[in-house]
Amino acid sequence: MMRSISGLGAILTALGLAIAMSGSAGATVHRRPGKFPTSISLPEGFQPEGIAIGPGPFAFIGSMADGSIYRADLRTGRGAIISRGPGTPALGMKIDPGGRLFVAGGTGGDARILDSHTGRVLASYRLATGKAFVNDVILTNGTAWFTDSTNPVLYKLPLRGRQLPAAAQRIPLTGDLVYGDGFNANGITPTPDGRGLIVVQSNTGRLFRVDWSGATRRVNLHGESLREGDGLLLRGRTLYAVQNRLNAVTVLRLNAAGTDGRVVRRVSDRRFDVPATVAAYGARLYLPNARFDTKPTPTTPYTAVAISDPER
Image (cartoon, rainbow, N blue to C red; front, top):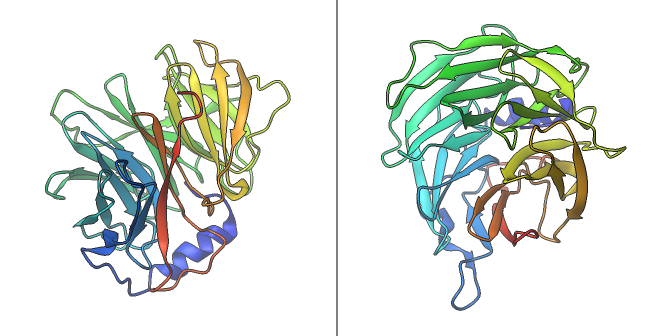
């Protein structure tokens, strides 16, 4: 879920880096007595982007640099890499109740599904053959939906229980959402009523409701903008939208259909360093600091930070 052409260049440059990824990278933990740590150290050079949490108090964080997956225990802050990447990014991620981890592959134009317990790749899908940026994913209504920030389509993986499909379907985006220069469709989440999808367009700051057919309608934000909008999280009718380079999480209240939203507040934290997305555990929100404005090296430090959910 990345947001600028310069950010894309940094990723492509970083793909060639030798990344120091020791299994005990989470050993540096900042915590208060009796509580989970509020900052988790990640492997040096990791370049985190997506995060998924569960089942239980475990976070899975993907590497933009090579697609590796790091699992952290939220109770201790310690963790290890459970799956070495294919050399292309691991961006947006979601996990199902059975522990299957769905991973958007960014410039790789692909998607992977992993066993979160073992790190084993259960399936891989080629979503695009040309230029693409598969950015985020959501699981809803028995389907995995992936955004592409370069091409005006969604990729659909119908799920039937534990059975995975042979191939993905391309759903063209029509209507109000028009692609332009830069990063377009990015974060994705269901509508509160579960009858559609919501997508943020990073380069315009607009939010859109998307039908299962791909037809889009601009959400009325009453003059507000979600510029640099990245990862999205829905809890009830409350939408959390990460605005990465603004170092902010914007909280909105949506109507049931997801056609109208009002900004309730914007939350920031001194520990934010261009967070890319957000996941929840209990009364906390967890955000990986992608540090898009910091030149990545094999020794660049990275963290994921926790804040209190301002609505709980």
